[in-house]
Length: 442
Image (tube, rainbow, N blue to C red):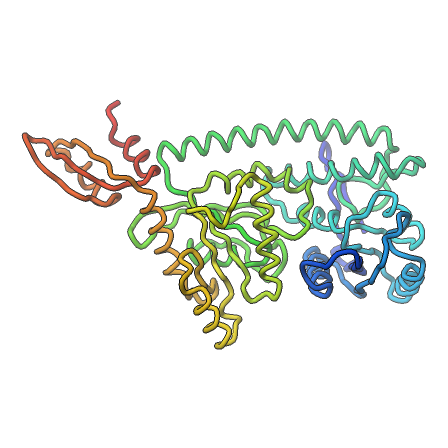
């Protein structure tokens, strides 16, 4: 393992490019309450998360627990088994797919003699590696620091030297606890100020869009549901789209044209996941606020995934935590059942029959393009439903304004009297604001 510390920046870990880190993944299945998904699915997802940062998972296990041990989470028998596997397979990192307390993490590291991270740290690690924009890096850095500070406060009171940086896979750090705590607090304060500037910039951008606006259509969904593939197909963009958890992190926006000729902004957002760390939800709130202000919210689901229902509920829960209530009952909510190309013919037939009468649920394939035309028509329909009848007075000599109305609105009637055209048109709020910006008297 190695990491570097850029001057005046929070150190971020870098995995050894020449040698993949040998890792083990353990999912503790605590038999207190039934799991929303199978233990096997949860373990597979954790292995996928590890693979997303190029870790070599050489051992994975579901550990059935009757009770959680306060000191180490798992019991001595499991520890003995893991110790043997670590020695035999030369494992360097253990990922516990659960939330560990700082004490549990420290005790596990002492007993096993290797680095141990929990689910929150793993997801933060992925986000730290994937963030590309300045805003994304700031948001991830804030989430890292908030999480890391809790580890400092509770687990390092024995005055061991703290592991360096925001990453969790690096080696020993250079500073002691009190100095680290002060440095982290100073950096948190600085990042929050920088993110506040980002929020102000976003507010200015939103105001600019309202002056010369386009309706915004936001894609949301579980990670790896196919949002970026759909985004690329509809917008002819080249956003990274891989069969990998969190393949894309930073949001992207492109203008697309609907069948009616109306233009909208399509926004691709970061994927959600079960047990999404609270630190990340809070850090990415500035980005996710774009979803709250969108004219249409499109929930992209991986309908071929056996846990698609549970994934849907995870996404709905995150949206509700952002302030949207009764999401599925909202007039501007569309559900896309993506990846129908992976279903068998009988499964596809059953799917179409089951949702035939659901106007806001559309089966699609981002790969083949099947269903995407219906999706675009649905967006057109929703925007038209939001439109209102408006009466305008236009000079007969103003051909430019009249042509614009024919191109961008539904013209209901035109009556000419004394060199003035009395026009009745149908337009949504975004088109009305655009019309006002272009043709209102200065």
